[in-house]
Length: 393
Image 1 (cartoon, rainbow, N blue to C red):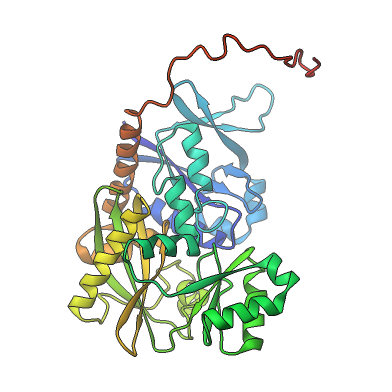
Image 2: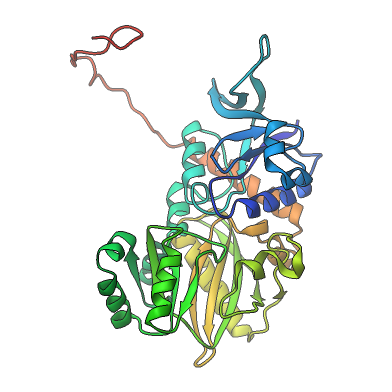
């Protein structure tokens, strides 16, 4: 019997379109002999849809038309199973779309990758691919993750955080604090965003003001850290769980500016193929000992946050002295980093198999944990409760 997989993608995020590409690439690589895939598109307003066109990448050229041809759904616990059901039905139409065995969220950015999707699925009690709530949330917060990495002896750049409310009240104080703590040049990032959206390098005070204005368009807090001028970016992927994990080969993405931009990552060559559009050198053209150190840091970072599934860890090398710094971790990386595993002999379908196996294994382990115990604490409680359908006491 095939495993029924709810493939979730889209969402309320600036990385919405990248999620669509990543998920539908994954759908093409899930073994049809083993899996029955149910694509679930999450609109930019947060509504979920299923339908004949939802799994067709061509339909996303006109999302309004796609939605009009699809039907809204939700997930529901039904006995010991989780089902996808229609939220609107015609007369005599059954609401059940299908039961599912595992959810596979390929969602990027806020309102999804940040632990939101994991929390929703965890509450339903359905096995799901990827990080749990805490590790996903930590992976999304660039400041929180750096605090944990530093505590675990993993090198990160010194940084500070600016709050948008503080900035609105006392802009000059925020600017002065960043200048004293970090100094120019600085790189300013929304604290909980990915895909290089809202990231700017500032070389002087006017540039810092513009950079903060840009970052605060996308988040309520901004991370400010020193910008390495002689920068080499190196990425490595990790696959596993908090107990056991392994690193892929390293890559060096090739950008066209001071930082690897959204266009560099996703629109390389003028036609988007998700992370497959990025120009990259695999394996990275770095000394073997540097590559091994990055792999070691990658696995340590993955386990320090308690991650599961596959993640991509991004590093920076300062060319002036060869120092290595961990930049950030992506708990649901674009294209699921399949291009970093294929050189190691792990084909994309095999990677997806492993991710689903890890999800089911975590669910089996969780089933051994006791979440409730018998108690009579309610037997002696008397409250003036609500009565009746309208809530009248």
